[in-house]
Image (cartoon, rainbow, N blue to C red; front, side, top):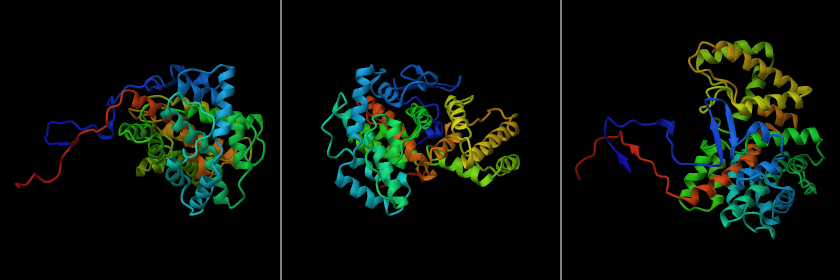
Length: 377
């Protein structure tokens, strides 16, 4: 459907448009706060990832018995069926970016469902199978790109420990598991961001959840969305040293180049996730390249704040700015940063897919036609 007329106001990017309701998360941009199901992110990072994903998907923190059920489910469902693993391995060997490979394979990840179940509806169950299998899929893509053998499936039921074992084949330290899970908790949901909205648009057509999740992965790939984490780290590599940060930022501001990971459409003050991830990065990046790049990012951050101090709307670091340093310190290659983001956010997408279908209406906005005038028939 299209309309014509000079008096119609177009909201580019749908900024400020209230498209629907949600009970999953609240982004309080004015005060710099983020809540999952009403609980502040600062409190939730003290829980395990499995506990918080249960809150996001099912609306409540699990008791001990339910938590064991969640962890057992993720462990069982997380195994890739052999034929699917073979197909994924061959697809990954083409050398495409891991996000492109994940988007291509996502609709197939729900095939051959496991004997166990966790969801309370078929929609939840299909989405949760895809979500549970994403870590193994990412690890297999990593193995194919690095041309090393696939890691044995770990026995650990702890999400973060199993994820890192799948990636590296060794048991991570408790500090590494905590840093990884905190990072993943920060990424579970963020209201109607581009990836989530893409999932809800596809879900509104009554397409299967796996198709909606594939669309969301495609949206997350973009450098103005999830892909900013990889680009922010590459920016730090380009700058090279803290001493070069001031001139780099000045050049960016003079030429209009984006400083990746700086600013967020929703927040008028500091992104609350950025405060947590910066502290996490400082704790885990203790030596070598991660420490050096953390210091470069701090210098870029400080230079940017100083050089934009007089602007009407201050831009500050968002989650993506420091996140790459955490992943790098955990020996995760930069090409997999956004895939790891997807492995967390997918649980939020599942919650939104289910929520969309509870009171569904096809998402079909109107466009203002600005082409040539209509011609007579």
